[in-house]
Structures are given as C-alpha cells and as structure tokens.
Image (spheres, rainbow, N blue to C red):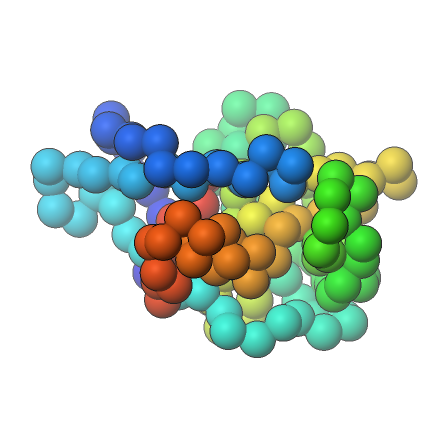
Length: 147
C-alpha cells in the first residue's frame, strides 16, 4: 500500500464501464511481482472537513500529491444519477482517474472533474463497488486507480 504504480509496461483487459459517470474498469496484470501495489478501499463515507490527498499526473508530472479538505461529501453528480465528493485539493488535467485518500491511506474516491471554481469532484468508491457488482466482479477490498 502506498505508491500505486512503479514504472513499467502493463497489460490491461477492458472489463466494463459506466459511461455517464466516466468510469471504466480494467483488469491489469504484470508478470513481475511487486510492480503493482493495491490501495485499500474505505468502507465509510468522508465527512465535511476531512483531510484528503489526491494522487495524479497533472500536466504530465508523475505522481503529484496534493492535500485538501472535503467541502461536501455528497453533491449531486452533474454527469448523471448518484452523488460525487466535492473537495478543494489542487488538481489539474491529468489528475482524472487518480485516487483520493483519507488520513488512513484508504481510497475514498476517484478524481473525475474540475468544477467551475477549480474545486475537484470525485466518484466515491461506493460507485465503483456498485459497478463491480453490476459487472459480477464482486466487491474487492483493494484496487488501483488510473494513476
């Protein structure tokens, strides 16, 4: 747990998607042990003011971490049904698909949008759990984000 990906080439198989929420599920494999680490998934929703950490590749900079707070743990999803997490950590293009983590190092969401005032929006891990169930893949305790 920690850094999600080390440099390398990975083979991925498309498993499924939720296009209205801009989430895709890929199965990534590696022939070398230790190249992929997994992120522990949070089973609880964040609350107002929780400290969060975003990992992404904004402007093609590798593995940038930004710190912020949860502004709104449940805001209506502008892309469809359900809700998203609204936060103030600095993100930019290239951050999409990166994980958002709580103080315990557990993934709470996946960065998806930048709001009109620069705030970040993320799909909560509960949405990913629901998509995995819909695709009959079960509910993992761990997964890796796109970053």
